[in-house]
Image (cartoon, rainbow, N blue to C red; front, side, top):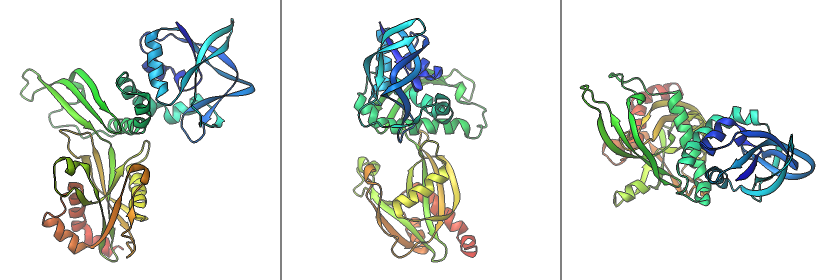
Length: 372
């Protein structure tokens, strides 16, 4: 049995119960002398460092069994934290324990406050922890560290779906009418796949239909077609796409709208503005929402927010863009609207979100030009 001193996010009971599991002991107040807890500089989580004369207030988990330790190790190792022996002070006296210390390179920021973290990050972290714990024993700490940014994005998408659900179906059936017999995530890296054994009610009222399904765990995305009403031109981007490549399409470099995932706690509109700047160097003056919805609801959780963005498209706007850390290599193309629409109608632009934005623009183009 091992005693573990906790000083940060796991002092929040909701998160501790999910991470620690059913046999996790209750925490007891304790102090670790010679240490200081702060926000990790540039991050939304805490760090602890040795500081003479300081005292870190937290709690100790007495007598953690192997199952609890394995769960804590899985969760903390994804952030690079590892156990080190310490002596903590309890009301009854000193106690030998272990504490998760941060990896090298994590600098101290402002003084840590658990209540502030719960307010700003608690819901997202708690939602993400369900996926983190579901892959325990199946991915390494290094893979977890690489996957965590996308785990947060997927968690944020689920929170958004609950906050702004789709309209109630005519049948009145809902999520709660589905029985889940088994649910797992067999693949987790930057992207993820989930599969489930479920029973779904039938419209005729007969016995529920049992089925096995798998789906790609996508993200919420913002998609923008930039349009300059003064010059009547659009800007499109060209890049390599893995989907067409896997489909064995001889031409996997596609011309499409600007697109990118919506980061945690970011609005779709903010993501649209950011992605347009990153991929094309354009500043949007206005955004017109075209449509929001699922791109392929039978096999993916991807949710698209499609816009036409009003901007100034200069002759020098067809730049090479994209973020190097996301392996983006993007070529911009400026096109008169009439040429763009002709390509769209002739099937030369086989990307559905682009078509949705393009046909919306065709319907609203005169009004946009008159108001420019």
